[in-house]
Image (cartoon, rainbow over all chains, first blue to last red):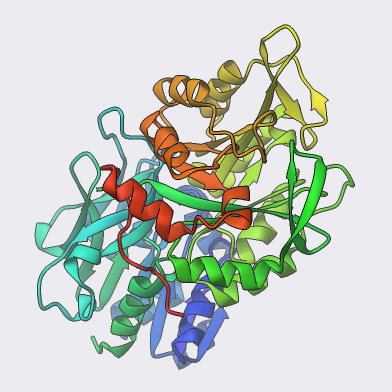
Length: 205
Length: 258
């Protein structure tokens, strides 16, 4: 079973629809016991970083999440803001501490003109050949849907396994042990996105 | 490389899709929202846009149920607009599966609402709709309430102010051109895309493949297409192929699982 963590911010329905389409059992929850029962954890998120951290504190999901991800080492998938929350800190609207699972910080996108911010739309990915996460996805057709103004800057370059080009390399996928996080929305990326989610479901950390 | 986006725009009234001319004339029936969304998903369009055109006039909020059903059937981005004037309404639509909301009347009447919504949901969620028409003295003016009420606001100044208020994108709709299939307003697209740092979605006027290329070459990040898809034989595949042949960056593969 997959537990999608509900802390009041996020495209929870689209994500659960996508996993259900793939035939998975999904629960949308903030209950620590339900997370204990799950094999996999998904951290969604749409919105501002500081508000999301505050919402997770208020819902009491940070302690159980740390247990699932750091102690029990269950596969964790973070999407969009859910990706960014695993970083140590963010400078979105002030300065905020993140979950700190990955040594990275979140900074504003600053591409040169005429590129616009937010970075909205389908962009291509540069990813390693023969990686389980991208199995069945053709490099030249690897477009995914992005919608974001901030991006992850990793302290350890080896954590960053896929990038996209937006006035320079922008981190698209980070993998660190049992943690896989992506800036784009696989649940909104049609066939490519569903394939990526299926590959993640097939993976054991 | 980021691709230019092709976005079918659907007007919803009474739970069905409709299409009119000049915002409030001659509505024609255009189908069931969910099945139409599935067809366009199979075509591999880049986003979908739904606007509940009754919503502001009749003080009615867009029904989330259509959105929920669409998000069960298609795994692609979509934007929902029409009568949005509360944070709770935005939260409901996002929870129902929408990725972005478009806000037109309330942005003009209460601009602080855009700032508040952007700080709560993120700039990237908030599309500000800009409906405008040319007045009898030749100047351009912003309209609200589904194109029925003129304001004294200038569209260019207004768009820049909405950017300052943290709008994520501007959706530019010409009341004069809507439904006429006579081409996009290239002059204003050019001016706004030069002045704005946020993406511009050009709407209103697509009638030929050349029109689509013109709007994107004028600087739009995305184009919406409505009448041309519903009432001509130009499919999204033809549009995409034409744009690609003319050197514009578009997704080349079919996108859908169905």
